[in-house]
Image 1 (spheres, rainbow, N blue to C red):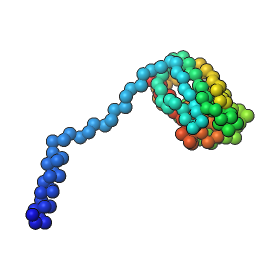
Image 2 (image 1 turned 90 degrees about the horizontal axis):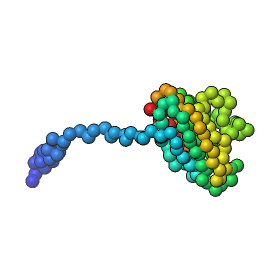
Image 3 (image 1 turned 45 degrees about the vertical axis):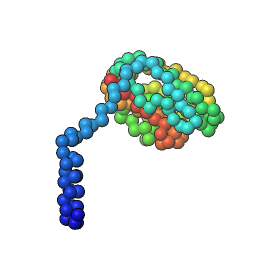
Image 4 (image 1 turned 60 degrees about the horizontal axis):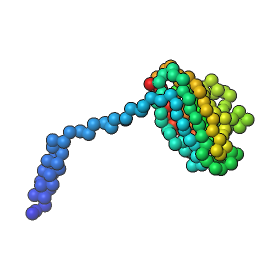
Length: 160
């Protein structure tokens, strides 16, 4: 086969391979079940085990946060702070570094905090009972212990 025929056969193969194929639909994100009670853990790898959950707007929510790590609180303490949907998690975390005496919750943003635990050491847990916002949207939550939010210890509470 000469060079010109090879190019034509290759071109025809490419055209025929693409014919009749429908475009792939956009992936559909599965809808999360709405919960009013949830347990979330934090570990020594600076991870929450649940990074996304959904709650009904205006519902009373019970959240158990459990630090399942073993490292000392001074080195690897964790909290869970649910923020207003307009609060940038990284801005909050950067300000939190300056406030160890306030459980790493920056006073200038306290009005942007929906609910928060104190800093927990290994094996400690705390229950939060709060009312979900009435406004539908995505509300970030973070561990504001220094370095944990930028390391990825954050998630989204979806209010539906």
